Length: 440
Image 1 (cartoon, rainbow, N blue to C red):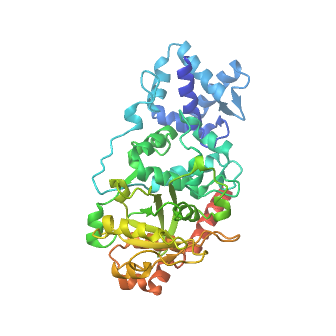
Image 2: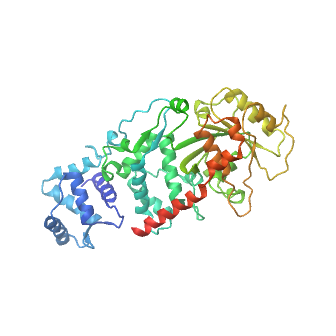
Image 3: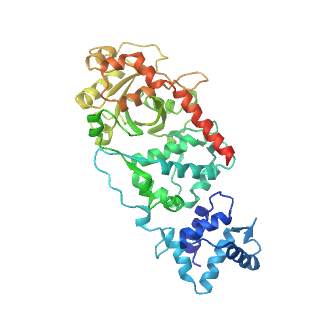
């Protein structure tokens, strides 16, 4: 066999090895057989296959299952006996073309996305990705070590996640991507670059393992945002918040605090691995939603369509810098004053002495004039605990309900109703996952 064929069959073996134990057991072999040839193997036929491998290869069968060496030997045997089409059937079923490369039609199935619509993973896709995580989380610590992550992406032609991902999603004390962080990164990729998500799902064998027509069946295209505004309700699960502020205002700290990192922990981040995105879950009225924060580069004279396209705007200023608020005021008045996008002003670095802002009016008065909620104080300079997360629940709530009146936004009862149960739901989610792990 050519090296490309060996490489392709090795990927097929790893995708088919559902429990990641390095062998294909009887259930996995039967699933593989049904997938490729639409018929299961009879128990005796299965034993006959393994016996042939045993006779020719000492380590071809392990623990009564087919090893990678045994799997490759079997296909070598098919080719030697002139049964090339058997191997080609397997290769084509797993997306390979005549050049032993993954077919573009397989990696990028058609998916129509109208304007003002976003893309999200649906329930089936999340279930599949959860099973992939479970498959590679060998020590069952609800996080992926560098070795486990490398093993997960071994079926890819390249490493898709760089070190910046660890500063985009939640990690544990070792800096390893957690279960929730893993799902968050997939959610971000689906939202920002759905074609890349389709490609990644293709490498993992989504359509085959999940028994779907293509990766596109794992994507939900949301309703036009204008219809959501008209109906004053949305079914979306992912909301984008673009974060504006002058240099040094605290934008990066605000993003990292969303991931539970205080100032001390943020100082350990390598500048080369910095991320301009942060994504995690929040709970609004008991519903789990993803909030995607994007730090916008402070270039006042030019903002791209992507910079202005979001569900909510967050304007961050440094309370200890008298000239910090002016940038936020100018951005709001030039780009968002006449838009329907809700805005929130964040008074960052609130642990420092507050100074008067050198602007025509105070931040509080500015917000009152423009019917915005009052500035929200925030600091990531907390002691041992993670920074307070209430502000992110508020941002998600405003993104979900952009029609909510100014009076409601000032009401503490409104915010209390929105955020109640968030901690309980978060704890329940992690507990449930750990229970499921123990049951496997």
